[in-house]
Image 1 (cartoon, rainbow, N blue to C red):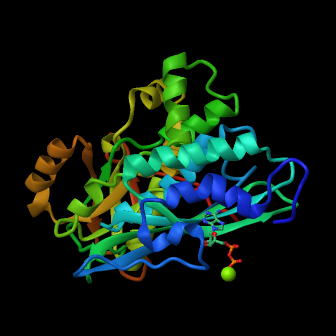
Image 2 (image 1 turned 180 degrees about the vertical axis):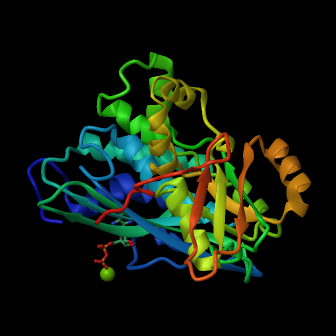
Length: 335
Ligand code: ADP
Ligand code: MG
């Protein structure tokens, strides 16, 4: 990064704010070498995942920097969790415009430190650059999974039940709150939804426990229906979702009470970072136990079926009277 009048140089920034985050990981060499080394635990392989977030696209420029950092890390941990992996380490590529202050970077690093403690992961390397564009952050996370056991999108079978963790639609409606819509909601409900948008809760303890139970899994980032479609496509099956069974928070119920059409946003909006998975009905009791033990809600919302002859994999959403609901959009896409 070129020197600017407001920021210390690249190496000083790394030493001051990022090297302390690498202190607990010997293979990071204090961020003083060109690269890091990381070995999987015996009998395991490393699951790797990267996700970038861009100012003005994935977060608002004046969002609190610590929350931006934590969301950037957590969206990656969510993918690892959905794959059954236990998070170990991450790398950080950060592109900073000249307008960024050192206070901003300090707060950003504090956010990372907080979540490193919460999720027991360490920073092991990265890259720091300046950019003429908005703040851009790419994180790559690594986690351990028993060799050959990573949960895939493609393992669902006909007759499997479709499950989802937590509640759906909070983040999508949280974004609406931030955009000044949903003004009729009470402050508590509005704050809950915004929190769910700004700070996902990756299901890191549950994910690894789904190995041996789930037949297919992914995390809900594009939207419930779009992500279920991903499982359908790779598993070459169709799915039926019963809309009244989709788990909703009190805040989302309040938003639906004044406008029932918001169910479209709930089912197709993104950023839930819950785990959507399929499992044979025979493991229902085990899942119920697991849900209780870990305190993570797990709800059955539908089933996997064979696709109609001549048709590609597809999703049917049924309303409370068993009638199919129509959707013009099945999730958010970038292009
Ligand atoms: P190189 O000159 O080989 O490209 P750098 O000077 O970019 O290496 O980085 C030096 C060290 O600092 C490397 O270990 C790199 O992984 C680490 N590093 C650079 N930027 C970051 C960052 N934003 N977060 C964590 N580590 C970083
Ligand atoms: Mg080098």
